Image (tube, rainbow, N blue to C red):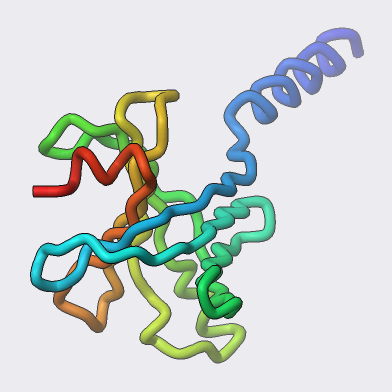
Length: 143
């Protein structure tokens, strides 16, 4: 009995330490197709508990909701730390959502547990990656 309680206790602690929490932050710029930086204010709410990304255009006050799930962590070719989410395609099908909402969503950090530089979004139906940039990310991605 004590062994079972200890096992449950340890599993509970481990599951909390690995659980993803909500990540809410704002960006102030977007990289345009021709490589320029435009002033565009967005707020991103990555809520893995509910399986949703809320992307709010602060200039227009409109919000888009995407069904997501955690995919992976990685360092990109520039050695920035990324947390990758992907569309939850099964939930999209169950809720009869458009296939155009399916994609990959990456939060870019300057280093692990560091500052957020921006968000990369690649929708499966588009060729280009959308890059939303924080104030700190502007100095890095402005080239």
